[in-house]
Image (cartoon, rainbow, N blue to C red):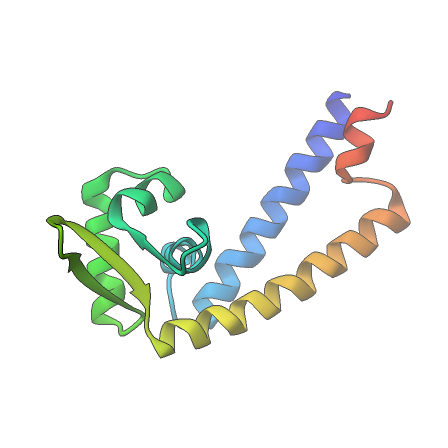
Length: 133
């Protein structure tokens, strides 16, 4: 069981390292990539509040406010106050943000397919192998 967990953790780290590098190659930071993912997909609405993004990113609210502001300056997101409560900020992707996220998502899908095929061939690093010993 420990060996399976170690292999699984190794595969996660490899994927995360790949993801960080892919984001940098796309011209954004890994944190901005995670932000775009959260905005586009966390709530299912295609937008999110700063509080929801803080939960998704597991970060402090004020750290996410700064991240959103840097992404807004970069042209990746728009932000606007919600009419009924001006303290709540709605964050959504710009056209550029959607393009960057689309390219990164396609790259990540290819990498996940590659990792999955390698795991099936070697029977190492699969979630199933963690529980069947």
